[in-house]
Each structure stands twice: as C-alpha cells, then as structure tokens.
Amino acid sequence: MLRRRLASLIPASIRTAQNHYQKPTSTFPPFARLQLDSVHFPQCRSDISMPSCQFGSVRAYSSLLALNDLRDNPGARKQKTRKGRGIGSGKGKTAGRGHKGQKARGTMKFGFEGGQTPLRRRLPKRGFKNPFSLTFQPVGLGKIAKLINAGKIDSSELITMKTLKDSGAIGKQIGDGVRLMGRGLEHIKWPIHLEVSRVTVRAKAAVEAAGGSVRRVYYNKLGLRALLKPEWFEKKGRLLPRAARPPPKQKDKVDSIGRLPAPTKPVPFTTEEKEAMPASTA
Image 1 (tube, rainbow, N blue to C red):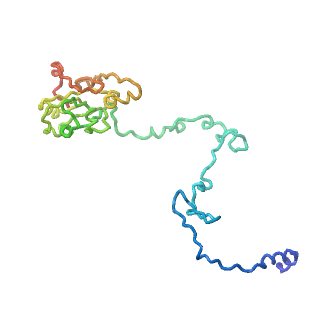
Image 2: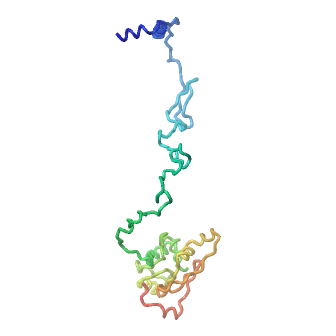
Image 3: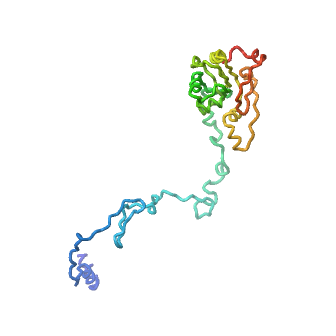
C-alpha cells in the first residue's frame, strides 16, 4: 500500500525519464566484429629503465607499483605535539604538566624514586674487578720462528711489539703489552733479540741459550699507540709523546723504559742491569 502511494506521488515526467535511460534506443547499426588476427602489437621489453610500452594512445604498464606511488599507511606518521601554543591546542598553559608539584617544576636524575632507596642500591653487589689488573697478549717462540722462516720477520734486526703486530704474530687487541711464552722453544736455533712487556723463565732461557737477548720494556697506553701507530700522530699533526716511567709497583718487573719511535737495534745489558735483574722473570 505504501509503495503504491509513493509511486503516485512521483511526477510522471521523472518516471518517464527513468524509463528512457533504462531502455536506451540506438539508431546506429551494430558494429562489425573486429578482425584482430592481422593486427600486430609491439612486444613490451622487461627492462627496469623501460617500465611500460606504448600501444598507440594506450599505455600498458608492466607493474602496478611505481616509486611515485609509495605511501605510508594511514596513521603511520603522527605530527609532533607542540606544547605551550595556546588553549585551543590542548597542550597550552601548563603544557600537560598539571599544576605545581615536583614533576611540573623540573627534571630528576635518572633512577630517582622519590626519595626511597633506588633499585640500584637495593640489589646486592656481586663479583670484583681489579682496576689495576694488566692484560698481556701471549705469543710463543714457535710462532716467531715460523714467521722468521717464512721471511716475514728479519732475525738480524730487533724484534719489537710493532714487528710482531705487523707480521701477524699478535692481533690488534694488545691490551697492556705482549708476553713472550716458551711454546715451541725447540725451533729457536739462532740468536734473536726481542723487546716485549713480559717474558717467562723458559722463554728467556731458550733465547739466551741460542745467543740472543730479551728485554722487558714499559709502555703506557699512549706509548703503545705511539709505538704501534706512529702515523696516527702525524695525521693529527702531533709530536710523538715522551716515554713514560713505570709506576713503583712495576719497577721490578721491567728492565727499561720503552723507546719511541720503534727501535731497530738492540741495547746490550750493562753489568749493573744484569745484577739487578731478579731471578724470576715471569
């Protein structure tokens, strides 16, 4: 009943126009079927520099994705909140800090918990790390003899820690120096002269038995850098530092102060130095 009343209310002109568009009347004869067998279209090349090819006025794309169509997802990028820019922004006046109080007036140090004992102090201490400990990179006599036989080290010159690093006997992480070990001491059959930070009793006895010498020299952190990488100071336009003296606790563990730049000739031990050398050299 309601549908009949609505139909009666619609004007007759509107209903006539609607029926006219629903049933199009064409006076043109139907088109003949196109013969596409004889039409040859150019082949599109799959090339990055040519993403599309042209068919007359029609452009066919080889991919639906292009660099100029890349967009972020809606809501992926949010605009930064501007504080203190008026009441209408929602973050004006107090800028989200509220009224008064400790949090409204300034910042507290990291880990502050309002005056109570913080977590870093409530947890117990575990372990111990000696701030005065020294780390030496070990190198054996057998490895040095192997590099001498390979021609990477000249046995007639003084073998320093720089020589060992350049030849690959030790790595980059030297730490506080190099410790000479007695591994492979049976391969040392000719005199060699070395300057290292520490040396074991077996290694020193083997080198001296072959007619060589081992000197324990002291370098601090800056001195080691100047010994191993003197080009760094030249690059920075700085002079090489002066050799540093060993601290009192290391005086009895070294024979002399390290020389800068890297020495090439050994220094013979004097009679006083030989008498002052302790029996245990490890």
